[in-house]
Amino acid sequence: MALSWKHHTLVQALISRGPLKEREFHSIFTGVTGRNPGTVKKIFDKYLLEINKELSYVHFELKACRDQYDGQVCYGVVNNVSDDQSKLGTKYSVPQIAFFKGIIEAIAQDEAAQGCISGFDALNIRLENQISSEASSSQQQVPAAFKNFSMSQKEKTLDELVRDKWLCRTREGNIGLGIRSLLDLRSWFRNSDVPPCEVCNEAGVKAEVCPSEGCAVRIHNYCLKQLLSQRDDKRCSGCGKQWPLGKVTKAEAFEEAKNDEENETQATGPKSKRRRQQRSHEDSTENSASQAYLASTSGANARRVTRSTARLR
Image (tube, rainbow, N blue to C red):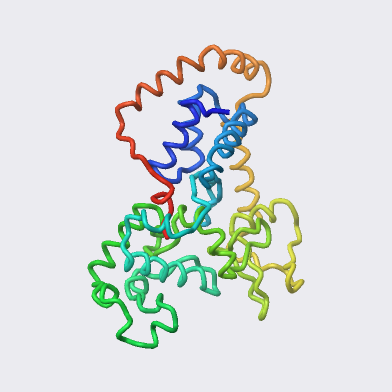
């Protein structure tokens, strides 16, 4: 089927603004369609399915994942192909890409799964380490652009990567992975043997690690809270020992689950007469609401993004 302007608006919002938190994306969906995703989840899912069916022809995909630093769900459009053509369109230079790769490797390969490195360590990433072993064996083969990449250039690149959501700054001021990296680099995490979360099977970049010697099991903090709210006993599947709760108490886990339920209730609203009235009213107001939203955004600057510019490689 041909996508409508509503589908196009949703895709363009994610491409031009970058990955969005679930609440932001739901708000845009409501503005475009006049419907609340909390009350019409099947319709929301149908929109995403239709979008992905068309995007698959150009190897794009609209995906959702959790931000491992705050546990919030985010949506973004990613490129499923990593080829030379897609690399040519990036706005980043070769030294900048090497700098970025050095940072994500340092973060992802941390056995403590802290999910971040200090700003000092980030700025002292050595670009020549990103050259193949054969090339690095000869100093003359290190590109001049790598050797001349100054500290001020690294600082500027770091700010750009944070602004573009490839990286993020934690509350403590450290450098972590941005939501765009968490969405776009899933295959890289698997190929780099980053241990997955025992619960959700996503890469455990920022996670709680089993302290038992020789045990590599990791669980995201938000996944651990969910487990604690559902069961009294939690033993590590790797070593069989009791999982250390640390700062995550059972009371906090129940409070987290309670907050999630309250947020869901606010999103979905009452399930009785009010919902039936709203559902019938939505059909009559959908067109007017969507037209108003289109008019309000028609003056915004749109940026055309091709497959090559949608992915940093």
